Length: 83
Image 1: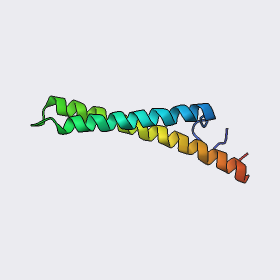
Image 2 (image 1 turned 60 degrees about the horizontal axis):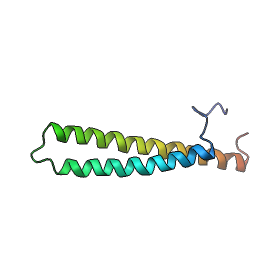
Image 3 (image 1 turned 90 degrees about the vertical axis):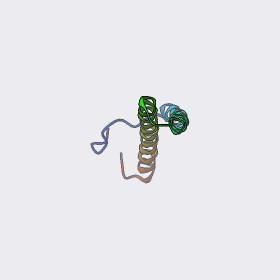
Image 4 (image 1 turned 180 degrees about the vertical axis):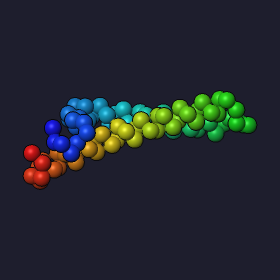
């Protein structure tokens, strides 16, 4: 593993799974946020929907970041800057 990386990049199969997970998590996070908008006045349920939405959207971003790092590593290998 390259010393500049913190974790081993995902395999192509893992990358596809991460992309699928990211799409679901983004959709679910957006859905939770829309339920939050229906909580009038804001109450405990609104806090739960907000927390759930934040967690789902953060997880989606993490999945995207991991797949981006895999693509960057593949490009770097092709460009010859990493071994």
